[in-house]
Length: 386
Image 1 (cartoon, rainbow, N blue to C red):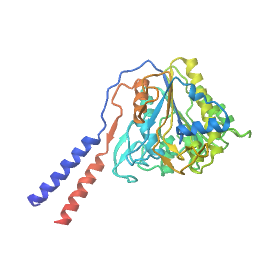
Image 2: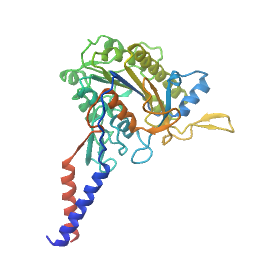
Image 3: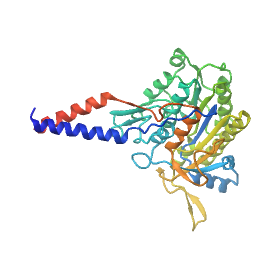
Image 4: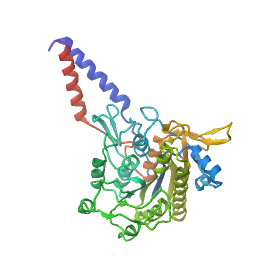
């Protein structure tokens, strides 16, 4: 190899090493706190005006407005406006990533070339001997529940996400039936498998529980097979409560789904049910005395604005926006000052701290296979040009 080629290769490798130094996580040692449980509730797509429009249209008050600490979360990903995968990763791992990445940082959006795999707060809780669970109105392989349970470069890998969840050590994953799970597979992996609220109520305490619910979760309709989010939250808290503590993530996914189609009625019904889940969590925290509750969103959906001429709220988009989203807390005054805005990555860092994770968080594992593949590709490219 000519000296010029070697110099070029060395320069590229050094430049890449400098890039890694720039993007590598800034670790922080945290001190264990006297908090046993953390409950995080995510209203997917819930912006400030989702709340204001619901209150104005329905003439209701929201319980989440009564929480003592109220600010905002900034949601952008490395791509700018975030999707739910990058939003969930920020909230679970404390790291900004590209859209579609789930607890990973890929070389470019949608690429399978994973640079870092990040520990999430569910894993942090389990490493401490605590329990960890997920409740969502979405399918189990939806971006938000996946962001607290798996590591992959792409959110659309539904079957792979389901397999990773099946092989995880989480204690509870309750979701709408996503079509990729089965009782046979999950029960052989040590889970109790349920498809309804009544079956979940019969799950023996201490058994790992996976649910693919057939009924309505996003809000109550009066049908026998309803499993409304607030009821699932209350039951999950009973199943997870233990002496060592737990982490629970609850997602109201249909605030987002209805806003994508500009369905204000569906959005509002879903938001009201999510608010009931918030009240359920806070009531548990008040009785327990050693639990903090965090309420936020991964992003805003629909570009909801107030039209001054019409004197009413309206959708201006069918997609996500970069608007700051609500951030509310009960039992902790450390994250945000009233009316202020913080990065969404701070949520994960606080959760790990409050759970008592006395280690490196955000914690990243570097994929050396990526580095070797990258260097080989660079050498090949330089060789072809010379």
